[in-house]
Every structure is written in C-alpha cells, then in structure tokens.
Amino acid sequence: GAVVSQHPSRVICKSGTSVKIECRSLDFQATTMFWYRQFPKQSLMLMATSNEGSKATYEQGVEKDKFLINHASLTLSTLTVTSAHPEDSSFYICSARAISDTQYFGPGTRLTVL
Amino acid sequence: RKEVEQDPGPFNVPEGATVAFNCTYSNSASQSFFWYRQDCRKEPKLLMSVYSSGNEDGRFTAQLNRASQYISLLIRDSKLSDSATYLCVVTRRDGNKLVFGAGTILRVKS
Image 1: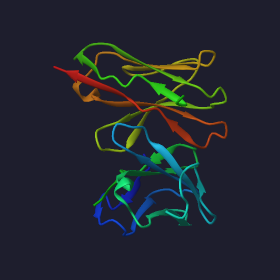
Image 2: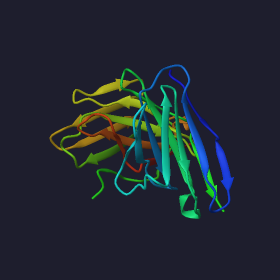
Image 3: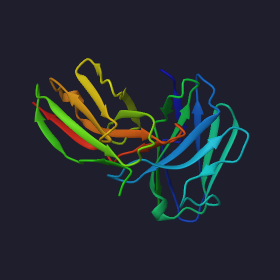
Image 4: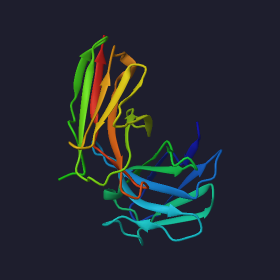
C-alpha cells in the first residue's frame, strides 16, 4: 500500500519554542494532505486541510497563526507549531489523499512541550 | 452531541469469541463509512469500508444502516492480535474530511 512518512516521530521541546513536523507521501503524489491531533483516550480531530500550492483550510477553533501549514510540493506538507505550550502536547498525525480518494496515514509525531 | 458515537469499552473477550461493535452517526449527509484499527501509540489503519449491502473480509463483517444511521462491525473467532482500538469513521458530504469516533477498545485474552 501507499506509504506516508512523518518526521520527527517524537519531539520534546521547551515552552515558547517552535516545532516543525514534516509529512511526506513516499510513493504517490498527494494534492491534499490532512493534519490531525489526538489527545490521550480521545478521537483524532481534524485540524486543517492542506492543499498543494494554496492556503490551508483550518477547522473551527484551530488557530491558523499558531499552527502554520505549508504544502509546497505534491509530496510534502509541513506543520509548524509556533510558540508551543504544554497544552499543545499531543499526537499529531498527517494523512495524504491518493488519487483513489483513500487517505493514508503517517505514523504520527508525539510532541511533548515542557 | 458528538458526530460519531461509539461505546468506548473495553470489550474483554477470550480467544475464539465473536464480538460486535456498534457506532452511530448524527449527520445524515455523511457519505462514506469505514472501520479503522488503531494500535497503541500508532496511526490508524484502514480495516474496511462499510456499505449498506454489508461486506465481509475474512473474519470481519461490516454493516451500514442508513435509515438508523448505524454502523456495525462483527469479528468472529477473535485472535490475540485483534486487540486494538476500533475507530468508526464517516466522511462528510464533500467526501473529503474524515470524522472519527473516539474508538472502542478490544482486548482478546488467551
């Protein structure tokens, strides 16, 4: 099946710093990628839809200036958590939509903000 | 009310048992329906799509009832490796965005 990678898999940072997470579709082109967040024992929540070459679409309640998304190519989307705080600690997962409309998920990035 | 509701469980069953999970969704305009499996601290993986006519994949059977806005998953002859969280997922009208339930925990014990 299609492969989506995320980097880093785990990151620990100090409060106030920014963290960049990369999502790559390795063997297919994805015009649309999605970013999700999952807190412990909760469901995945869609944060934003990332479209190649255009601005991301954010879900209600997600601050676009805090969670910067860039989708500069058909195989790469990045999520930057700016001025991270402990409440931003979570499991961030991306998915990439293939031409078949199936979404393939990356392995996730566990962010811990101290 | 959550858009997708699931019984969180956990369901503790012995190997070989048959177990059924249910899910309800509130948006009647939902277009597509899926069951995903998520192992601890890992990404969700597609288990199967769900259709009104029902579909079966080995030991797994999924069913959709659009009138009742209800989705089910039946697992026969449970294996230890079936232990995971099972996520009920629907797409919205545009077919683009996935909406996840919180998941049902299954623990299969020997």
